[in-house]
Image 1: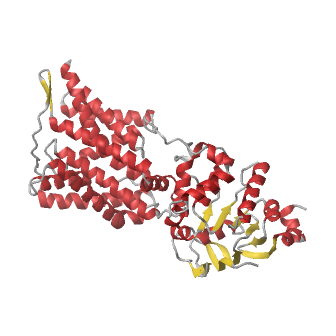
Image 2: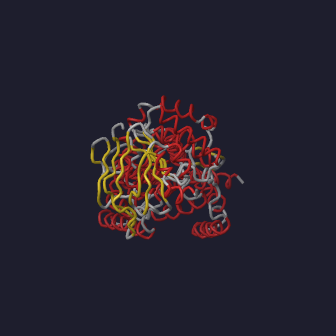
Length: 287
Length: 238
Protein backbone atom coordinates (compact mmCIF):
# COMPACT_ATOMS: atom_id res chain seq x y z
CA UNK A 1 0.00 0.00 0.00
CA UNK A 2 2.78 2.41 0.93
CA UNK A 3 4.49 1.26 -2.27
CA UNK A 4 1.56 2.53 -4.32
CA UNK A 5 1.42 5.79 -2.37
CA UNK A 6 5.12 6.41 -3.00
CA UNK A 7 4.66 5.54 -6.65
CA UNK A 8 1.81 8.05 -6.91
CA UNK A 9 3.88 10.74 -5.20
CA UNK A 10 6.75 10.09 -7.58
CA UNK A 11 4.30 10.22 -10.46
CA UNK A 12 2.94 13.59 -9.33
CA UNK A 13 6.45 15.01 -8.95
CA UNK A 14 7.30 13.94 -12.48
CA UNK A 15 3.90 15.11 -13.65
CA UNK A 16 4.61 18.67 -12.59
CA UNK A 17 7.60 18.61 -14.95
CA UNK A 18 5.49 17.13 -17.76
CA UNK A 19 3.11 19.98 -17.06
CA UNK A 20 5.87 22.58 -17.27
CA UNK A 21 7.12 21.15 -20.57
CA UNK A 22 3.56 21.19 -21.93
CA UNK A 23 3.07 24.80 -20.86
CA UNK A 24 5.82 25.75 -23.32
CA UNK A 25 3.95 23.98 -26.10
CA UNK A 26 0.49 25.22 -25.23
CA UNK A 27 1.55 28.84 -24.71
CA UNK A 28 2.91 29.00 -28.25
CA UNK A 29 -0.18 27.31 -29.67
CA UNK A 30 -2.54 29.48 -27.67
CA UNK A 31 -0.95 32.72 -28.77
CA UNK A 32 -0.14 32.05 -32.43
CA UNK A 33 -1.88 28.79 -33.38
CA UNK A 34 1.44 27.17 -34.20
CA UNK A 35 2.01 23.56 -33.17
CA UNK A 36 5.71 23.59 -32.40
CA UNK A 37 7.18 20.32 -33.62
CA UNK A 38 10.63 21.49 -32.50
CA UNK A 39 9.36 21.31 -28.89
CA UNK A 40 11.14 18.02 -28.14
CA UNK A 41 14.37 19.22 -29.73
CA UNK A 42 14.24 22.33 -27.55
CA UNK A 43 13.73 20.17 -24.46
CA UNK A 44 16.78 18.12 -25.47
CA UNK A 45 18.83 21.29 -26.03
CA UNK A 46 17.86 22.38 -22.52
CA UNK A 47 19.21 19.07 -21.21
CA UNK A 48 22.55 19.53 -22.97
CA UNK A 49 22.78 23.19 -21.99
CA UNK A 50 22.48 22.20 -18.35
CA UNK A 51 24.96 19.37 -18.80
CA UNK A 52 27.65 21.64 -20.25
CA UNK A 53 27.04 24.44 -17.74
CA UNK A 54 27.21 21.95 -14.85
CA UNK A 55 30.11 19.76 -16.00
CA UNK A 56 32.32 21.87 -18.28
CA UNK A 57 31.23 25.11 -16.62
CA UNK A 58 31.38 23.68 -13.12
CA UNK A 59 28.18 25.44 -12.08
CA UNK A 60 25.66 24.22 -9.56
CA UNK A 61 22.97 22.73 -11.84
CA UNK A 62 20.16 24.62 -10.13
CA UNK A 63 21.98 27.94 -10.41
CA UNK A 64 22.53 27.20 -14.10
CA UNK A 65 18.76 26.99 -14.73
CA UNK A 66 18.26 30.75 -15.25
CA UNK A 67 21.02 30.70 -17.87
CA UNK A 68 19.28 27.82 -19.65
CA UNK A 69 16.02 29.79 -19.56
CA UNK A 70 17.64 32.92 -20.98
CA UNK A 71 19.41 30.88 -23.66
CA UNK A 72 16.10 29.21 -24.54
CA UNK A 73 14.37 32.58 -24.76
CA UNK A 74 17.02 34.09 -27.03
CA UNK A 75 17.13 30.97 -29.19
CA UNK A 76 13.34 30.93 -29.36
CA UNK A 77 13.14 34.55 -30.50
CA UNK A 78 15.76 33.77 -33.17
CA UNK A 79 13.83 30.71 -34.36
CA UNK A 80 10.69 32.83 -34.49
CA UNK A 81 12.23 35.43 -36.79
CA UNK A 82 14.00 32.89 -38.98
CA UNK A 83 11.48 30.09 -39.23
CA UNK A 84 8.08 30.95 -37.86
CA UNK A 85 7.35 34.62 -38.60
CA UNK A 86 6.65 34.11 -42.31
CA UNK A 87 4.25 31.22 -41.83
CA UNK A 88 2.08 32.77 -39.10
CA UNK A 89 -1.51 32.98 -40.25
CA UNK A 90 -0.88 30.65 -43.20
CA UNK A 91 -2.14 27.10 -43.55
CA UNK A 92 -1.29 24.98 -40.51
CA UNK A 93 0.80 22.60 -42.60
CA UNK A 94 3.28 25.42 -43.25
CA UNK A 95 4.09 26.02 -39.59
CA UNK A 96 4.15 22.27 -38.92
CA UNK A 97 6.75 21.83 -41.65
CA UNK A 98 8.73 24.89 -40.57
CA UNK A 99 9.00 23.78 -36.94
CA UNK A 100 9.64 20.18 -38.02
CA UNK A 101 12.53 21.44 -40.14
CA UNK A 102 13.94 23.26 -37.10
CA UNK A 103 13.62 20.03 -35.14
CA UNK A 104 15.49 18.03 -37.82
CA UNK A 105 18.31 20.57 -37.91
CA UNK A 106 18.75 20.53 -34.12
CA UNK A 107 18.54 16.75 -33.80
CA UNK A 108 20.92 16.32 -36.73
CA UNK A 109 23.45 18.75 -35.33
CA UNK A 110 23.11 17.31 -31.84
CA UNK A 111 23.67 13.77 -33.10
CA UNK A 112 26.77 14.85 -35.01
CA UNK A 113 28.21 16.76 -32.06
CA UNK A 114 27.25 14.61 -29.11
CA UNK A 115 26.32 11.22 -30.66
CA UNK A 116 23.27 9.46 -29.27
CA UNK A 117 24.93 7.89 -26.25
CA UNK A 118 23.54 8.92 -22.87
CA UNK A 119 24.76 11.84 -20.80
CA UNK A 120 24.11 12.39 -17.17
CA UNK A 121 24.24 15.26 -14.67
CA UNK A 122 25.46 14.30 -11.20
CA UNK A 123 23.33 15.59 -8.36
CA UNK A 124 23.15 14.31 -4.82
CA UNK A 125 20.34 15.64 -2.70
CA UNK A 126 19.18 13.55 0.26
CA UNK A 127 15.77 11.99 -0.30
CA UNK A 128 12.77 11.72 1.98
CA UNK A 129 12.15 8.29 3.44
CA UNK A 130 8.62 6.87 3.65
CA UNK A 131 8.73 3.42 5.26
CA UNK A 132 11.14 1.32 3.22
CA UNK A 133 10.88 3.65 0.25
CA UNK A 134 12.70 6.87 -0.56
CA UNK A 135 11.47 9.81 -2.59
CA UNK A 136 14.58 11.15 -4.31
CA UNK A 137 15.55 14.68 -3.31
CA UNK A 138 16.29 15.83 -6.84
CA UNK A 139 12.74 14.87 -7.88
CA UNK A 140 11.31 16.95 -5.06
CA UNK A 141 13.43 19.97 -5.90
CA UNK A 142 12.67 19.70 -9.63
CA UNK A 143 8.93 19.52 -8.96
CA UNK A 144 9.02 22.56 -6.70
CA UNK A 145 10.95 24.54 -9.30
CA UNK A 146 8.55 23.46 -12.06
CA UNK A 147 5.53 24.62 -10.06
CA UNK A 148 7.22 27.91 -9.15
CA UNK A 149 7.97 28.60 -12.82
CA UNK A 150 4.39 27.79 -13.80
CA UNK A 151 3.12 30.15 -11.09
CA UNK A 152 5.54 32.86 -12.22
CA UNK A 153 4.27 32.53 -15.79
CA UNK A 154 0.71 32.87 -14.56
CA UNK A 155 1.55 36.03 -12.62
CA UNK A 156 3.39 37.39 -15.65
CA UNK A 157 0.47 36.76 -18.01
CA UNK A 158 -2.18 38.23 -15.71
CA UNK A 159 -0.42 41.00 -13.82
CA UNK A 160 2.14 42.59 -16.14
CA UNK A 161 1.56 44.88 -19.08
CA UNK A 162 3.57 42.69 -21.47
CA UNK A 163 1.83 39.56 -20.22
CA UNK A 164 -1.56 41.14 -20.82
CA UNK A 165 -0.42 42.23 -24.27
CA UNK A 166 0.43 38.59 -25.03
CA UNK A 167 -3.09 37.59 -24.00
CA UNK A 168 -4.56 40.43 -26.04
CA UNK A 169 -2.66 39.36 -29.17
CA UNK A 170 -3.75 35.76 -28.53
CA UNK A 171 -7.36 36.89 -28.24
CA UNK A 172 -7.51 39.23 -31.25
CA UNK A 173 -4.32 40.14 -33.06
CA UNK A 174 -5.86 42.76 -35.33
CA UNK A 175 -7.60 44.58 -32.50
CA UNK A 176 -4.31 44.52 -30.58
CA UNK A 177 -2.54 46.20 -33.51
CA UNK A 178 -5.31 48.80 -33.69
CA UNK A 179 -4.69 49.62 -30.02
CA UNK A 180 -0.99 50.20 -30.67
CA UNK A 181 0.36 46.82 -29.56
CA UNK A 182 3.25 45.76 -31.85
CA UNK A 183 1.87 42.27 -32.33
CA UNK A 184 4.78 40.81 -34.28
CA UNK A 185 7.22 41.69 -31.51
CA UNK A 186 4.78 40.30 -28.93
CA UNK A 187 4.54 37.02 -30.87
CA UNK A 188 8.34 36.75 -30.99
CA UNK A 189 8.52 37.28 -27.23
CA UNK A 190 5.77 34.72 -26.58
CA UNK A 191 7.58 32.20 -28.76
CA UNK A 192 10.80 32.90 -26.87
CA UNK A 193 9.06 32.36 -23.53
CA UNK A 194 7.54 29.09 -24.75
CA UNK A 195 10.94 27.82 -25.87
CA UNK A 196 12.60 29.09 -22.68
CA UNK A 197 10.11 27.09 -20.62
CA UNK A 198 10.66 23.98 -22.78
CA UNK A 199 14.43 24.33 -22.29
CA UNK A 200 14.11 24.69 -18.52
CA UNK A 201 11.80 21.67 -18.42
CA UNK A 202 14.48 19.77 -20.31
CA UNK A 203 17.15 20.97 -17.88
CA UNK A 204 15.04 19.81 -14.92
CA UNK A 205 14.57 16.40 -16.54
CA UNK A 206 18.36 16.23 -16.98
CA UNK A 207 18.72 16.51 -13.20
CA UNK A 208 16.63 13.34 -12.86
CA UNK A 209 17.52 10.91 -15.64
CA UNK A 210 20.29 10.18 -18.15
CA UNK A 211 19.47 11.60 -21.57
CA UNK A 212 20.48 11.74 -25.25
CA UNK A 213 19.76 14.27 -27.97
CA UNK A 214 16.75 12.11 -28.88
CA UNK A 215 15.25 12.14 -25.37
CA UNK A 216 13.14 15.22 -26.08
CA UNK A 217 10.89 13.23 -28.41
CA UNK A 218 9.26 11.23 -25.64
CA UNK A 219 8.55 14.38 -23.65
CA UNK A 220 7.19 16.10 -26.73
CA UNK A 221 4.66 13.28 -27.08
CA UNK A 222 3.81 13.53 -23.39
CA UNK A 223 3.38 17.28 -23.86
CA UNK A 224 0.81 16.64 -26.55
CA UNK A 225 -1.09 14.26 -24.28
CA UNK A 226 -0.94 16.75 -21.42
CA UNK A 227 -2.02 19.57 -23.69
CA UNK A 228 -5.03 17.63 -24.88
CA UNK A 229 -5.90 16.74 -21.29
CA UNK A 230 -5.68 20.38 -20.29
CA UNK A 231 -7.19 21.94 -23.38
CA UNK A 232 -5.03 23.43 -26.15
CA UNK A 233 -3.79 26.91 -25.43
CA UNK A 234 -4.50 26.79 -21.72
CA UNK A 235 -1.37 27.01 -19.50
CA UNK A 236 -3.19 26.41 -16.20
CA UNK A 237 -4.86 23.36 -17.73
CA UNK A 238 -1.47 22.12 -18.93
CA UNK A 239 -0.08 22.01 -15.40
CA UNK A 240 -3.16 20.13 -14.18
CA UNK A 241 -2.92 17.84 -17.19
CA UNK A 242 0.72 17.14 -16.38
CA UNK A 243 -0.13 16.27 -12.79
CA UNK A 244 -2.94 14.01 -14.00
CA UNK A 245 -0.61 12.23 -16.42
CA UNK A 246 1.99 11.80 -13.67
CA UNK A 247 -0.71 10.51 -11.33
CA UNK A 248 -1.80 7.93 -13.89
CA UNK A 249 1.78 6.79 -14.42
CA UNK A 250 2.23 6.54 -10.66
CA UNK A 251 -0.88 4.43 -10.23
CA UNK A 252 -0.16 2.18 -13.17
CA UNK A 253 3.58 1.57 -12.77
CA UNK A 254 3.52 -0.75 -9.72
CA UNK A 255 1.21 -3.12 -11.57
CA UNK A 256 2.49 -3.34 -15.12
CA UNK A 257 5.83 -3.53 -16.86
CA UNK A 258 7.23 -0.07 -17.60
CA UNK A 259 7.02 -0.60 -21.35
CA UNK A 260 3.23 -0.71 -21.02
CA UNK A 261 3.01 2.81 -19.62
CA UNK A 262 2.98 4.60 -23.00
CA UNK A 263 0.40 2.14 -24.33
CA UNK A 264 -1.92 3.00 -21.47
CA UNK A 265 -1.17 6.73 -21.72
CA UNK A 266 -1.90 6.96 -25.40
CA UNK A 267 -4.99 4.78 -25.22
CA UNK A 268 -6.24 7.24 -22.64
CA UNK A 269 -5.24 10.07 -24.96
CA UNK A 270 -7.44 8.68 -27.75
CA UNK A 271 -10.36 8.11 -25.38
CA UNK A 272 -10.14 11.68 -24.09
CA UNK A 273 -9.90 13.09 -27.60
CA UNK A 274 -13.14 11.30 -28.43
CA UNK A 275 -14.99 12.05 -25.20
CA UNK A 276 -13.67 15.56 -24.39
CA UNK A 277 -12.36 17.12 -27.58
CA UNK A 278 -11.96 20.50 -25.84
CA UNK A 279 -9.87 19.10 -22.98
CA UNK A 280 -10.81 18.28 -19.42
CA UNK A 281 -10.11 21.69 -17.90
CA UNK A 282 -11.68 24.46 -19.90
CA UNK A 283 -10.55 27.30 -17.71
CA UNK A 284 -11.29 30.76 -18.95
CA UNK A 285 -11.62 29.77 -22.58
CA UNK A 286 -15.37 30.25 -22.79
CA UNK A 287 -16.83 32.51 -25.42
CA UNK B 1 -13.46 75.48 -41.51
CA UNK B 2 -10.79 74.33 -39.09
CA UNK B 3 -7.53 72.75 -40.08
CA UNK B 4 -7.43 69.38 -41.81
CA UNK B 5 -5.88 66.76 -39.53
CA UNK B 6 -6.28 63.69 -41.72
CA UNK B 7 -6.25 63.50 -45.48
CA UNK B 8 -6.90 60.54 -47.74
CA UNK B 9 -5.46 61.18 -51.20
CA UNK B 10 -6.63 59.15 -54.22
CA UNK B 11 -6.33 55.86 -52.38
CA UNK B 12 -6.74 52.61 -54.27
CA UNK B 13 -6.98 49.45 -52.22
CA UNK B 14 -8.65 46.08 -52.06
CA UNK B 15 -8.37 42.45 -51.08
CA UNK B 16 -6.22 40.32 -53.38
CA UNK B 17 -7.72 40.47 -56.86
CA UNK B 18 -10.74 42.47 -55.78
CA UNK B 19 -10.17 46.21 -55.85
CA UNK B 20 -12.60 48.11 -53.64
CA UNK B 21 -11.32 51.68 -53.51
CA UNK B 22 -10.84 53.45 -56.83
CA UNK B 23 -9.21 56.71 -55.92
CA UNK B 24 -10.99 57.71 -52.73
CA UNK B 25 -10.10 61.16 -51.44
CA UNK B 26 -11.38 62.81 -48.32
CA UNK B 27 -10.40 65.26 -45.61
CA UNK B 28 -11.13 65.18 -41.90
CA UNK B 29 -11.12 68.57 -40.17
CA UNK B 30 -9.89 68.70 -36.59
CA UNK B 31 -12.51 68.95 -33.86
CA UNK B 32 -15.35 67.97 -36.16
CA UNK B 33 -17.50 64.92 -36.60
CA UNK B 34 -17.21 63.63 -40.15
CA UNK B 35 -19.18 60.71 -41.47
CA UNK B 36 -18.83 58.37 -44.42
CA UNK B 37 -22.08 56.89 -45.65
CA UNK B 38 -22.91 54.74 -48.63
CA UNK B 39 -24.33 51.42 -49.75
CA UNK B 40 -22.91 48.06 -48.74
CA UNK B 41 -19.72 47.36 -50.65
CA UNK B 42 -19.12 51.02 -51.46
CA UNK B 43 -15.79 50.88 -49.63
CA UNK B 44 -16.56 52.57 -46.32
CA UNK B 45 -14.91 49.98 -44.10
CA UNK B 46 -12.05 49.55 -46.57
CA UNK B 47 -11.41 53.28 -46.36
CA UNK B 48 -10.97 53.03 -42.58
CA UNK B 49 -8.83 49.92 -42.98
CA UNK B 50 -6.61 51.73 -45.48
CA UNK B 51 -6.21 54.66 -43.11
CA UNK B 52 -5.14 52.35 -40.26
CA UNK B 53 -2.99 50.15 -42.47
CA UNK B 54 -4.88 46.89 -41.97
CA UNK B 55 -5.28 47.04 -45.73
CA UNK B 56 -2.24 48.36 -47.58
CA UNK B 57 -3.21 50.88 -50.27
CA UNK B 58 -1.83 49.99 -53.70
CA UNK B 59 -1.63 53.67 -54.58
CA UNK B 60 -2.45 57.03 -53.05
CA UNK B 61 -1.41 58.52 -49.74
CA UNK B 62 -2.63 58.90 -46.17
CA UNK B 63 -1.53 62.24 -44.71
CA UNK B 64 -1.84 62.64 -40.94
CA UNK B 65 -0.88 65.97 -39.34
CA UNK B 66 1.06 66.86 -42.47
CA UNK B 67 3.11 63.63 -42.51
CA UNK B 68 2.83 60.81 -45.02
CA UNK B 69 1.91 57.79 -42.88
CA UNK B 70 0.72 55.51 -45.70
CA UNK B 71 3.37 52.83 -45.13
CA UNK B 72 3.47 52.82 -41.32
CA UNK B 73 2.39 49.60 -39.57
CA UNK B 74 -1.01 49.69 -37.86
CA UNK B 75 0.33 49.81 -34.30
CA UNK B 76 2.60 52.74 -35.13
CA UNK B 77 -0.38 54.69 -36.48
CA UNK B 78 -2.32 53.98 -33.29
CA UNK B 79 0.64 55.27 -31.34
CA UNK B 80 0.47 58.50 -33.38
CA UNK B 81 -3.22 58.90 -32.56
CA UNK B 82 -5.03 57.29 -35.50
CA UNK B 83 -7.32 54.94 -33.63
CA UNK B 84 -10.03 52.72 -35.11
CA UNK B 85 -12.89 51.10 -33.18
CA UNK B 86 -13.42 48.19 -35.57
CA UNK B 87 -16.69 46.80 -36.85
CA UNK B 88 -18.03 44.04 -34.60
CA UNK B 89 -16.29 45.48 -31.50
CA UNK B 90 -13.38 43.00 -31.59
CA UNK B 91 -12.90 43.07 -27.83
CA UNK B 92 -10.41 40.81 -26.07
CA UNK B 93 -13.21 38.49 -25.03
CA UNK B 94 -11.30 36.42 -22.44
CA UNK B 95 -9.97 39.50 -20.67
CA UNK B 96 -11.76 41.71 -18.19
CA UNK B 97 -13.25 45.05 -19.18
CA UNK B 98 -10.54 46.80 -17.21
CA UNK B 99 -7.82 44.83 -18.99
CA UNK B 100 -9.40 45.74 -22.31
CA UNK B 101 -9.24 49.41 -21.38
CA UNK B 102 -5.66 48.95 -20.21
CA UNK B 103 -4.71 47.42 -23.54
CA UNK B 104 -6.29 50.41 -25.25
CA UNK B 105 -3.71 52.53 -23.45
CA UNK B 106 -0.77 50.32 -24.46
CA UNK B 107 1.29 52.97 -26.22
CA UNK B 108 3.58 55.30 -24.26
CA UNK B 109 1.62 58.43 -25.23
CA UNK B 110 -1.68 56.87 -24.16
CA UNK B 111 -0.25 55.49 -20.93
CA UNK B 112 0.79 58.95 -19.84
CA UNK B 113 -2.89 59.94 -19.84
CA UNK B 114 -4.19 56.67 -18.40
CA UNK B 115 -5.91 58.01 -15.28
CA UNK B 116 -7.53 60.95 -17.03
CA UNK B 117 -8.82 58.78 -19.87
CA UNK B 118 -10.14 56.09 -17.54
CA UNK B 119 -12.07 58.78 -15.72
CA UNK B 120 -13.36 60.06 -19.04
CA UNK B 121 -14.55 56.60 -20.10
CA UNK B 122 -16.27 56.02 -16.74
CA UNK B 123 -17.89 59.44 -17.03
CA UNK B 124 -19.30 58.86 -20.50
CA UNK B 125 -20.14 55.20 -19.92
CA UNK B 126 -21.22 54.61 -16.31
CA UNK B 127 -22.30 51.10 -17.33
CA UNK B 128 -18.72 50.28 -18.23
CA UNK B 129 -17.58 51.43 -14.82
CA UNK B 130 -19.92 48.94 -13.16
CA UNK B 131 -18.54 46.11 -15.28
CA UNK B 132 -14.79 46.70 -14.96
CA UNK B 133 -14.02 43.28 -13.44
CA UNK B 134 -16.27 41.29 -15.76
CA UNK B 135 -14.96 39.34 -18.78
CA UNK B 136 -15.62 41.43 -21.87
CA UNK B 137 -17.08 38.46 -23.74
CA UNK B 138 -19.90 38.11 -21.20
CA UNK B 139 -21.31 41.62 -21.72
CA UNK B 140 -24.38 42.46 -23.76
CA UNK B 141 -23.92 43.81 -27.28
CA UNK B 142 -24.54 47.39 -26.23
CA UNK B 143 -22.15 47.18 -23.31
CA UNK B 144 -19.52 45.63 -25.55
CA UNK B 145 -19.87 48.53 -27.96
CA UNK B 146 -19.38 50.96 -25.07
CA UNK B 147 -16.24 49.10 -24.03
CA UNK B 148 -15.01 49.14 -27.63
CA UNK B 149 -15.47 52.91 -27.88
CA UNK B 150 -14.01 53.29 -24.39
CA UNK B 151 -10.98 51.22 -25.33
CA UNK B 152 -10.52 53.49 -28.34
CA UNK B 153 -10.70 56.56 -26.09
CA UNK B 154 -8.06 55.05 -23.80
CA UNK B 155 -5.65 55.11 -26.76
CA UNK B 156 -5.63 58.93 -26.51
CA UNK B 157 -6.81 59.33 -30.12
CA UNK B 158 -6.30 62.43 -32.19
CA UNK B 159 -8.75 61.01 -34.70
CA UNK B 160 -11.19 58.41 -33.41
CA UNK B 161 -12.62 56.32 -36.22
CA UNK B 162 -15.66 54.18 -35.49
CA UNK B 163 -16.89 51.53 -37.90
CA UNK B 164 -20.61 50.69 -37.79
CA UNK B 165 -21.18 51.61 -34.19
CA UNK B 166 -24.96 51.20 -34.31
CA UNK B 167 -24.88 47.73 -35.88
CA UNK B 168 -26.95 45.31 -33.81
CA UNK B 169 -27.92 47.88 -31.20
CA UNK B 170 -31.43 48.92 -30.24
CA UNK B 171 -32.47 52.27 -31.76
CA UNK B 172 -32.58 53.83 -28.30
CA UNK B 173 -29.08 52.69 -27.39
CA UNK B 174 -27.73 53.74 -30.77
CA UNK B 175 -29.16 57.20 -30.19
CA UNK B 176 -27.60 57.40 -26.73
CA UNK B 177 -24.21 56.40 -28.09
CA UNK B 178 -24.46 58.98 -30.85
CA UNK B 179 -25.30 61.57 -28.23
CA UNK B 180 -22.13 60.59 -26.38
CA UNK B 181 -20.11 61.02 -29.57
CA UNK B 182 -21.55 64.48 -29.93
CA UNK B 183 -20.41 65.35 -26.42
CA UNK B 184 -16.95 64.00 -27.22
CA UNK B 185 -16.88 66.17 -30.33
CA UNK B 186 -17.92 69.18 -28.26
CA UNK B 187 -14.98 68.37 -25.97
CA UNK B 188 -12.72 68.80 -28.97
CA UNK B 189 -12.25 65.23 -30.22
CA UNK B 190 -12.02 64.64 -33.97
CA UNK B 191 -14.29 61.82 -35.12
CA UNK B 192 -14.70 59.89 -38.34
CA UNK B 193 -17.73 57.64 -38.44
CA UNK B 194 -18.73 54.97 -40.90
CA UNK B 195 -22.42 54.24 -40.49
CA UNK B 196 -25.11 52.16 -42.09
CA UNK B 197 -27.65 54.16 -40.10
CA UNK B 198 -27.52 57.06 -42.54
CA UNK B 199 -30.32 58.94 -40.89
CA UNK B 200 -28.64 59.11 -37.47
CA UNK B 201 -25.24 59.76 -38.93
CA UNK B 202 -26.35 62.71 -41.05
CA UNK B 203 -28.40 64.18 -38.23
CA UNK B 204 -25.33 64.29 -36.05
CA UNK B 205 -22.33 64.88 -38.29
CA UNK B 206 -20.84 68.19 -39.32
CA UNK B 207 -19.67 67.01 -42.69
CA UNK B 208 -20.52 63.97 -44.78
CA UNK B 209 -19.01 61.98 -47.61
CA UNK B 210 -21.19 59.69 -49.69
CA UNK B 211 -19.20 56.79 -51.10
CA UNK B 212 -20.29 54.82 -54.15
CA UNK B 213 -18.27 52.16 -55.95
CA UNK B 214 -15.06 53.04 -54.19
CA UNK B 215 -15.14 56.77 -54.90
CA UNK B 216 -16.55 59.84 -53.25
CA UNK B 217 -19.85 60.37 -54.99
CA UNK B 218 -20.93 63.44 -53.11
CA UNK B 219 -19.77 65.52 -50.18
CA UNK B 220 -20.87 68.49 -48.17
CA UNK B 221 -22.11 69.71 -44.82
CA UNK B 222 -24.23 66.92 -43.35
CA UNK B 223 -27.34 69.11 -43.32
CA UNK B 224 -27.10 69.73 -47.05
CA UNK B 225 -26.36 66.13 -47.86
CA UNK B 226 -29.38 64.99 -45.89
CA UNK B 227 -31.57 67.36 -47.92
CA UNK B 228 -30.16 66.19 -51.24
CA UNK B 229 -33.01 64.56 -53.15
CA UNK B 230 -30.90 61.81 -54.61
CA UNK B 231 -29.55 60.86 -51.20
CA UNK B 232 -32.98 60.98 -49.63
CA UNK B 233 -34.22 58.52 -52.22
CA UNK B 234 -31.23 56.22 -52.24
CA UNK B 235 -30.44 56.00 -48.53
CA UNK B 236 -33.13 57.52 -46.41
CA UNK B 237 -36.15 55.98 -48.08
CA UNK B 238 -37.91 59.32 -48.27
